[in-house]
Structure formats: C-alpha cells, structure tokens
Image (cartoon, rainbow, N blue to C red; front, top):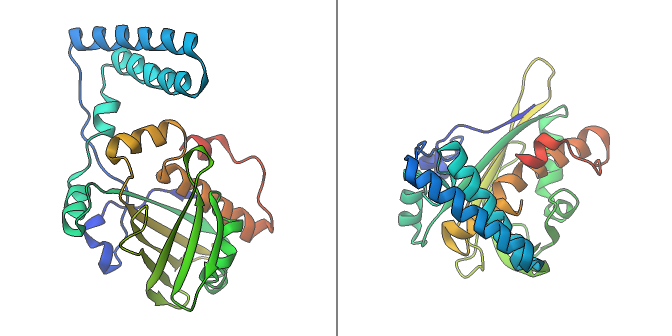
Length: 254
C-alpha cells in the first residue's frame, strides 16, 4: 500500500513525517470560465497546426485552460501558489521558491534489508528511474547524474546529513547544485508481519520556479510524480526481485 505522508514540512530537519502541500480550492466566476475555455480552444487549435515540441506544450496548456473553465476550478492558479510551509522553507533556506513532495509505501521485507540496499547509493540507479548513476565519493559524499528535460544530464554533489542504521538517511545537496534539494527516507516496522513502512520526503528549489514545476507536472516529470513511481519500483524490486516494465496506471498518473 502506498500513500501520501502527513503535511509537516516545518519539521523537516527534526525528522518528523513531512509531505504534501495543501492549496485552497479556488473557484472561478462565469466570465472568467468562458474566457478560459475560449483561450484554451484557441491555443489548442494553434498547437495542432504548429506541431512539434512547442505545439505539444501549447496543447497541454490549452487543455489545462479548457479544463479550468469547464470545471470552474483554477488548477493553474493553485499550481502556481506555493503553500505557506513551502514559502517558509524557501525563506529559511534563501531559495527563490521551494516545493515539497512526500510519499510512503509498505514493503514486505525487513527494515534493515531495505536500509542496507538504499544506503549503498550506487544501487539507486536501478531503482530511481531518472538517475543515470551515483558515484560514491566517500561514506558521506556522493555525486549524482540525473536525466533532466530534453535529455540533458544534471549533476550535483550531495552529503549525508544524518544516518541512523536501519532507520533513517537524510541528505542535502551542495549549495552550488543546479537543483538544490534536501530530504530524507525512513524505514519503520509496519507491525503484524507486514514488513516495513518506507517514508520519503524531498524538498527542492524548482529551476524555473512554480511555473516550471507546473509544466514538469504536465509532462509527468515533476518530482512528486516521480517519487511515487520510484518507491513503487523499490517495492517491486525488493519483494519480487525485479521491476515490472508496466507500472499500474494509478502510479503513473499520480
């Protein structure tokens, strides 16, 4: 079973479960809804004529505008509005903006076994879909190579900031990293011979701000979506010894 964790970003450094951002439901008025549908239709029509990558992006944006107007809700506006917790973390860390994502999954394997696999960071390119490789520098430092948009490889160095064997690993990227990030993964006994609850959180600075975060989500490359997929892959590998080529649609769609 996998699920979001509790929204406690303010306790990120204290080791408390953290996670999903909470945004208010923003309702639209009649004229704004009609304008959104019309603008979305025009953009979608242009996208069909234009084609290519730009057309694809325009088509996605047009679809969002149409859905926004049809439902009377404002998903774009919500996506561009960080939660108060994210605002506080960005201010505290000196980032332009911050995004927090978290998820949890129950894996039917012993806690120590899962910790040992994850703690050998070189293993993680087999589990984390966008990670090309992790070069272990020493016991606390590593260099990560990650596939970014348009096939560009993004690299950064990370340092382990907390290590409780069999329980918890926390890390933080170096200050000059292209994508600043920090986070943790915890392993907790699930009880009743159900294995281990694995909880993970990532806090990062979106390279193009909240707009970039929204576009990444539309393209299925947003870390929140990827975290759910990666924990599911970890579960499959540890329980079945291999990762299925076809993840359940509910995991893909987030």
